[in-house]
Length: 387
Image (cartoon, rainbow, N blue to C red; front, top):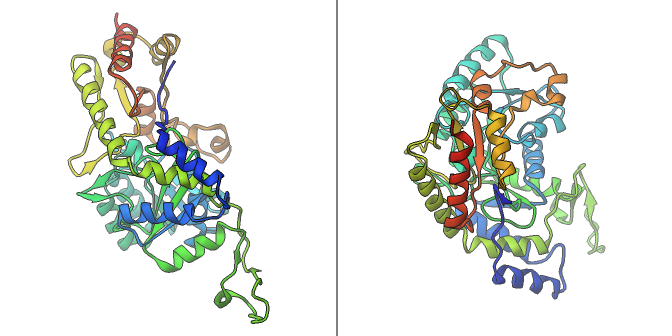
């Protein structure tokens, strides 16, 4: 089976983890701040907080922005459920903004219309979470302008997008958002085995997220309720936090992988260009790349023209899977999930997202994908959609 995604692990990566295993620190040692500094410096952000998953990063990002009961969060329906769940963890309400038909990211036009109506109805969001699907940035400058007009905060869900750029600048620099979140799951651009990171240029948000990721405990005397100078070992829990810390084992792998981040993204672009060329005569839409963006190309999603193919979505998907091509669907619109249906969402809520979902398939895309494997993917797909 050729999977849709796969990590690329080198001997240097393995040695980095072995070095930690042989050190005095397995959990909280020098590798975690080293990884944080590497990502912050690469992206041009002031602060980076490593955690055990991007889901955890989204959660503490919401909390750091003061999200709570009675507040509203808007995000894209075409993303992993964590992008919406983080709002519910905080007791907030979730809503969805339909997607752009070309980029498949949050539609600025739909967001503009929805905000205008929400202002009239008195139900504006406190936080908007644009998702950089496949590694291609949303139109962040336009969303940022809307945030200033309507007073909401922005969390960039860049789980797919480390190594990507928007208007020539590295995603994660915080120019157009309050917090950016990355994922280091094994199928992502780089991996820490598992893990995530939240980046910000706001010292108060960074301090708040640092506290929340580690049980709400501080050892900083300046933050303690009382400061007994004779008790140098003293620590205090000053808030209700979580055990969301990243270990040194995971951070060592992530730090090692950072050295090849640009190489990984370049390889993904080369694979995407080759797919584009081989699909030029087939009844499908290949991934649109906005000229303002340099995608990290986490995913390569095709959109099939079934009215020309004469096969169903399931026919093509099953034909690929049965031939050993590990295709996937990214994503089912979140509000169509059973849990969200119980919250009151119904089919038809975001029409463009549903049209997208009915036509797309994610093909294998990872740096180690060989030309022969790519040829196999294309040949099987050609057979699967042939009349």
